[in-house]
Image (cartoon, rainbow, N blue to C red):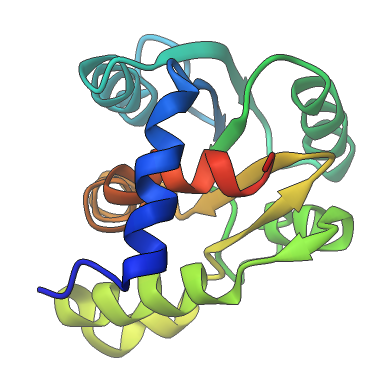
Length: 173
């Protein structure tokens, strides 16, 4: 696998100097609780295994006012990355993408494109139903994935973990 150009590799090296990265986890669900939030537990384990810190954790309903309020609340904290899971589908109750996309100051279309490409390898054409997205809001990287455990794990292992420091560095350099 190609690991990047010389400038990308230089950026990755500079990004390593960031130290511990604060990451907030937001689970969007009408039914999950802290006890049943497997995604939140799994992400917490992955984040700490890389030596980073979970600086915020919320479970909220997929209500536009709650999504907007938590985005603003966590964007004002020390978290550099806000990881959202859930609410990215096209059902009437799925509003997370709509709220986040209206608030993004910069978008990273490549995240959603790559996520759907990788997801296609697993679920086929149903990957087109995902509105996974990423962007920047108030100097924070915002990443939003579907709420299925497979989707969260795919996004983390294939896209986020390999570039975590680089992503966190790019939004503040």
